[in-house]
Image 1 (cartoon, rainbow, N blue to C red):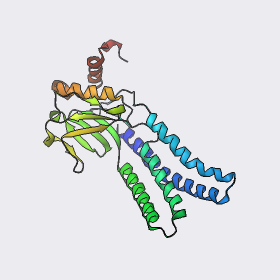
Image 2 (tube, rainbow, N blue to C red):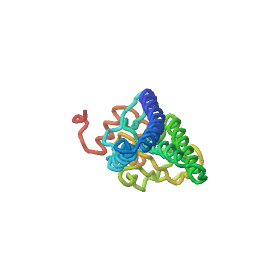
Image 3 (cartoon, rainbow, N blue to C red):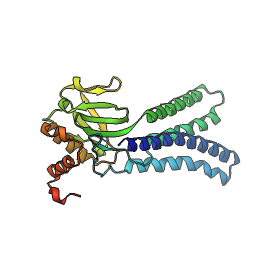
Image 4 (tube, rainbow, N blue to C red):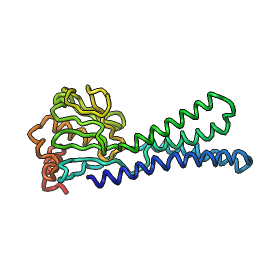
Length: 249
């Protein structure tokens, strides 16, 4: 699991550096093409069309469909992030492009220079957030952990409400955890503890499977101690799907 986290974090850090650099280069290309005009001037359409295509792809992308992975040494069932380029780095690239484009037209207009400063701050903010933490979820004997390598939140099993169903959110973007004992939740920063939203759109796991697994353990504390073993995952899949243990891969 540690190797997977390290590799995924390297990919994310690379993307969050390359995206604004590509946006900056696209902005320079667009300004150069615009200065030449004619057929070459049509190149100014390439960056916005490319961004629009990526945005549509992101909006149309379906949630993950994979199983949870098992790491017996870490005693965890977990899901890493997908390898595809995600929305925020793409947005960072667009901000870089808009910063270059706006700077070329700014002149002495204070509003446009303010916009350039906003674009720069947003690019830096996205880079810092993606540099420090990536989408990740793990089920351990302790509870549910989201975010890696530094957890964004740790929700102990004892903190979850057993009576309220755990369900995926709209379009499989998140899983909402019902919190009955918010004082047990450990969260980075000062976010609210009355509920926890697990962002799952960027994960490989199927949101419905993750929600069902969390719900199962919230209502079956006798199985907490076995979480993270291959035998327990086989039992979990049998409990959720009814597939006989002998028929599971």
